[in-house]
Length: 262
Length: 262
Image 1 (cartoon, chains in turn blue, red):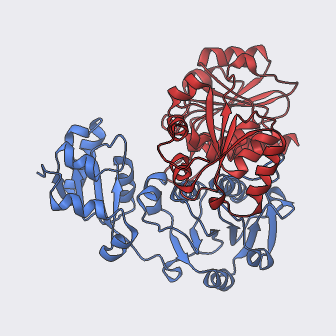
Image 2: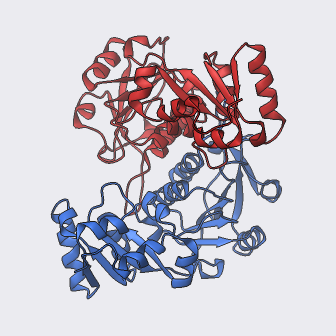
Image 3: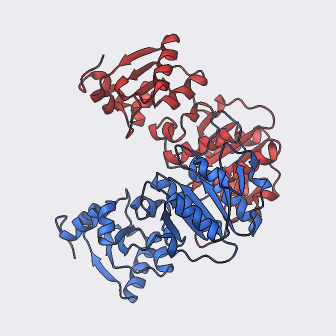
């Protein structure tokens, strides 16, 4: 039982909030009952799980702990003080796991026939990537490509905003050239979405092997993607701003693709 | 020119980050060139604008400053130190306004015939409300009702995530009973959206006077709304999680409503 906030384990976990430390250690933080549950359902390896019974909310946390115990996962009890130190939440539920990171190269993606792929170029905000991962899982995306991302997949805020669904959506981080080659080699039709295009998304046929391509929060989509696209589409809007939050735009496109492909 | 971070003006602005101070003073913070521009386009009164030329990014900030000067707005120059103290951004652009809050009661809403209204019950996160406001403006929502909200409209993170569009979407904060009465009195058909309902949103007729009703981030929609609804609909999904980020769900519903109503 870890009682002190000075315990080396506390420092080790807190350091994993930094991308460089995650890369060096090959580990990341998965906090919360729901998120750890998704990791287990995806057969992820859990190196160790810290728990603090005083913070458990109901029997769900205790049940998950029993399931982890049965699987032989290393369980480490913590007093409330040190647990609140390793937690990044306002109301922690007393469960936090350390999980090995995995390969996020394009080559690691296995895609079947008629895949639905989502490509996001230059994504900046972990909260947006997390929300995109939730939508991707809900609407049957087979792979997510983050092109030239300004964050890493294992950021604690991605884990949280995705509610753990980063474990269920195969995701690659890559450069633009490699992504274009990948879509070409896999015979995926590239559908570029931009406020500068005119064809409404409902007039596009999303069936078959398709890659939906979106730009980032600040700048929209790089013209290279629009030039190389097989379809150029837009989400029709009115109003003065004529722009959507990135994860909202991705959600609208994926909902329509899912409607057509069901 | 304010040179010291100890200047009372700096403290006055920083205090406005607190909801209670905003309520007492009847003022809130609008930071950034884009957000202040939206406020001006909506004919909002700007009490005073703080600016810091060293932080200007390009001529857009200088042009906005000239337009504010022409309108007779009080302009207060600040050195970089104090400006960075009043700013809540990582990369401030050197413009920050204090703007009077306004009435957010249901009675203050003026609605025409065949209005499109969005109702969100129990919203918790300012970032979600901001993203919802962007979608609401883009998809032609005439009014937004926040029922029993756990935040206030003038929170700096709402201003930011909405990119200032809170100035362009009439919004009321109210209790559940009052919202139900309002929809009834205005002859708005209530469309409850929940993962527990079955009718796909595409099979619903969104034309005419319609209120789309959504639950909050944690708990989905209160059964009272589902019982009192004229239509009960859902966003069809697959996957394990079967849930979307709140602002993504709102965006999918509004995109479909907008498609049908254009």
